[in-house]
Amino acid sequence: MSVAASQDGPRHNYLARHKPIPAGHLNDRRSTYWVDRQPLGPPTVMAMTPRLEELSQHRSLVANYRANREYSYDKEPFYKEIKRTSSNVPEASPRVVALSAHKIYHSDYQFDRDLPTNPRPANDASSRVGELARSKTELWQKKGGWPNENVFHTFLPQPVSLTARKHTATARVEALAEHKPYHTSFRPERPIRWDISEETLKINASLRVCQLARPRSRNLAKDDDFDPYFVPKAARHATITPRVEELSIPLPRKVRAKKAA
Image (tube, rainbow, N blue to C red; front, side, top):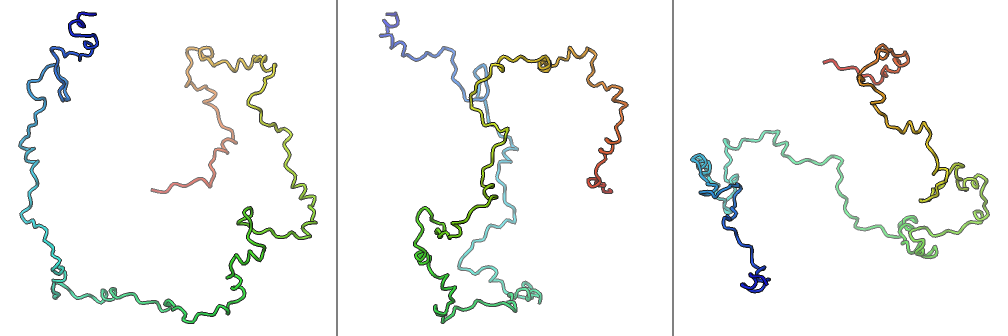
């Protein structure tokens, strides 16, 4: 057992103690500035200048300011209290009077008709209206009942006529009914894994393939005085052929004349 454990008790009591604070430790201050020594006074002092105090004052009211008038529901609105006189309410012009009149009906306007008091009896309807007025249930029952679940929302199967039963397809219909054959060069999809032939595994690249596979080297093909922007004399004195000049002329339908300023 150690000396500390023997004096203050077991070893775990000694290890459970908090870490001691060093002698020259300074507590953290809530400041955005980092200093190397203890400041003499507060780091930030709020000092108001006379100009800031003047600007912080609220805005004063003008001399002719009038507060909102109190509204009373017992009083009449202000526009009803004004008495009509020749000075405050002038007479309306004939045009204003004409515009203030309501819009009249058109000469061909027809008002809504009233409901008939004596409706037409049901037995006076035509045969077509009577047929359309019949319920679908009655019609389906006459045709053999409602369709089952497999042919619901479809027409009921009608009986096949004897002519349709004995009908034979023509040669053209038989030819069109045949499926389209595959092309002679058609190849089906290969499986994910397939065997590679022995010849493919042992093939050697030709000399030309090796030349094309070699990366291009500027040091071997060009000398030290190579200028990539140098234009040869043959290219300077080259002239275009009549055909190229003919093809370079723009189409008349695509040419637009500039507008005069």
